[in-house]
Image (cartoon, rainbow, N blue to C red; front, side):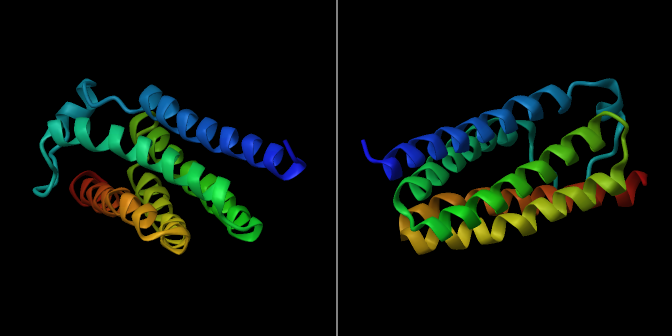
Length: 160
């Protein structure tokens, strides 16, 4: 195995680890069964609970798969850009999960999730530059983050 291949294997492992950390930490903080969350009036455009159960596993698998493919196949500069935006987007999404569900800082949480949605745009662009299929697989994740950010702002409007 060449040095470049070793570097790519390590980078793919890091991408997968980042997405796993995202999934695990989100699960630690997000508590839709808590009495506090159940007491909130939901925005009128909130999807039913089963949609969340379908979309999040898809999002995590798609994000890990596409980011791994890009990391393995793309030129170094594209991989570096992906890494920067992926870490930033995941950090903001995790900040939202914590801020919304733990200290109930709704406005700060909405700002964080809006930032996560914005930081994901370059990831989707990088994916499309790598191949149409890879970009198309991330479009539902991008749409979901935008919807989630709008819901977060809806909670701010109703309870902030």
